[in-house]
Image 1 (cartoon, rainbow, N blue to C red):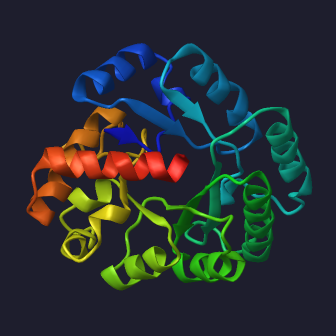
Image 2 (cartoon, helix red, strand yellow; image 1 turned 180 degrees about the vertical axis):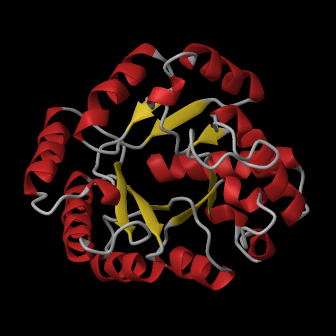
Length: 251
């Protein structure tokens, strides 16, 4: 399995990070992609990447971290992109769940970071909480042959998923698919498995039956099993397909 979205540098893992990664590897996770959040997460993220094999850092500013005057934040992202290679720009996007006062700033920051991804020819990792249509419209407007990516933490309908697929993007499926009232499970059978990638969003959104506890990449197996059951296919085949997809996404 390939973990396409986990915040392994989070403070919630400070006490047992090595053990947590060992559990994930024992469960069959072979690679871990870490989306950045803001300027404070860069150093701990790069420390994890340096210390643990098979962990990979990405670079970007999470929409909930976008400030009124966000230009300095994006200058730092651009500076890091010029210092070294990153496999993706992320986690970027729009989040209108907590606060709608900076909607326009979030949209502008998203457009700038998409531009950086196209410039550096790397994919984007999109966060779109309560903002799928706005995020989709911006990506569609800016889409060209140099832009690809993943709609992380997908929780929409089969119709929404088809919009993502039509953009030649991937769909990140996490713990929500296991939630009794999450709304995603009923649509999985209609979503093309060839455009799915697996993620946990650890330490957040632990899947059932771990819901309410700290999430970790070892639980990717629970997500894979649930999707396989819904798709009526062997779990091993589901894992093989989604891992191939993840490799194509991150090249």
